[in-house]
Amino acid sequence: MATIKQVFGSNTSLTVAGLATLASGGTAVSNEVNNSVDLNLAVDIEVNCACIDGTLDMYMMRSNETGDYQSTDELSNMLFIGSVTNGGTTPSKTYRVEQLPKFYQLVFVNSSGSNALTAGTINLTSANLTN
Image 1 (cartoon, rainbow, N blue to C red):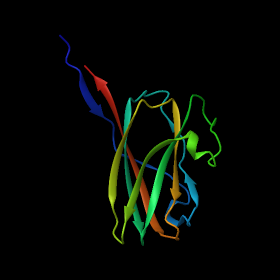
Image 2: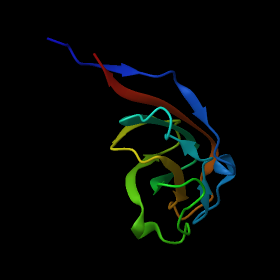
Image 3: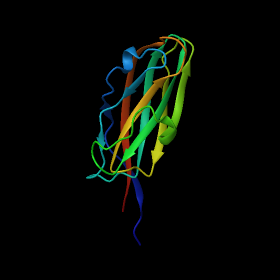
């Protein structure tokens, strides 16, 4: 009988232009992640942000075709992943998203009410099954 195990890909950095200087109410969108070859089942998203005092909300835009995404103004149509909140420290928070589409982008919104972000990095670790 085959034994099915979870396997992890390497930890890779995801580029999100403007994340480190995201103003209050501002939106930053990551580069597209192409999952059409690896067909990963899940991804662990590690969010590191240096905030003066604020909240960073994270969403996922999903697509079956490369470059085919809705407007970032339509947050209600995106998958809400979670929020990172702190009070002057640099938190590291990891979220798991399952049932990944062929292509996706992450959208970050500074919902703090102030220009709170001073730095930020996003790392992805894919997860899949093998026997």
